[in-house]
Image (cartoon, rainbow, N blue to C red; front, side, top):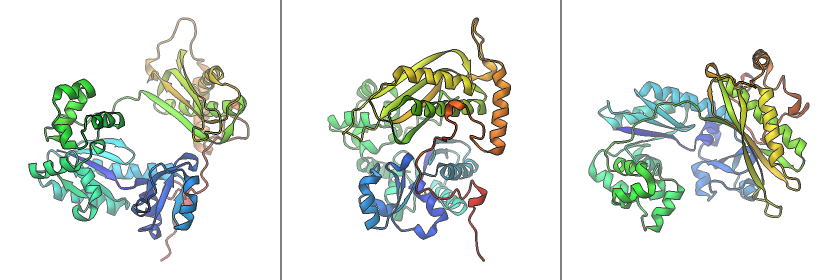
Length: 411
């Protein structure tokens, strides 16, 4: 039996842990550059603030109803997520961390699942202050989150009657594993609930949703066929950001792309990896319909494998120059490194290879930046005075990750 553990309104919950005065009040957290709403308290949801709401459009409502608005504080959220997942790892023999606020637990060896779920819920809440919902068996988590008072955030589908009732209640688009595309396909076939989905022939599901869809159907019916996945090697690393303002010149965007390439290189070195391919994309702001739109990505195979910031920044610049077009107002760019292998498995080429001197240089730069702070030593191509960062006008303190921001308790 598997359990899905989901942190409720996670980003908002992280803010409320250190601001208990916000509990029971409307709170929202915004995306990068304070663009749109990505997390809402239950009170904000009841006010009709939708997920993805553009912040500038809802600013009057925020002020009218005294909604507390925060910029994304990913350092805080990442640390709180690590704390939650570390506790869960002690409570289950096997765990698959699915996202920053979700994890699957293997509870096959346990008997009184409802009581054990309550124990997990209580321990996470007591040790971190983060409220969670626990659904044991497919579809149960949605019920645990929807009916918090009745379920006390823990729900187990442990008999056929409960299972049948849940499948009739659950909308097909809310089934974990059914994405937007498949949900639209099923809707066209007049399939609106999870129960109707389970009544479809395996042959049709396999033809339209692959064998994974068939496994999902069987899992909904209580026949466990999907096991927890082992952590696999990284396939790619991406660094991307929206700009604080629109840029039209190549030099400004080039500085940004160079910074993203350096960030990817640093992540590669942290994991002792090298890459063989780099991809760069740029795009305009699709919300600005008054401006011409443009979006382009290029994938550039590298002549050799590398994790050198200097070399990756050079290749990323070359890629950017091939897709940059004058006359557009650019809002976002990103760099992805792919074809990753362990540094110890580098295969030298006959004619061209990474500069061997860069290895000791990168080690020195990483060590100095680790001591004196990120960006203490930077490439000139990143810009001498600029440090590319997202707009965060309403960011909270880094309560748990920065010593100067640790809360003070007066007794």
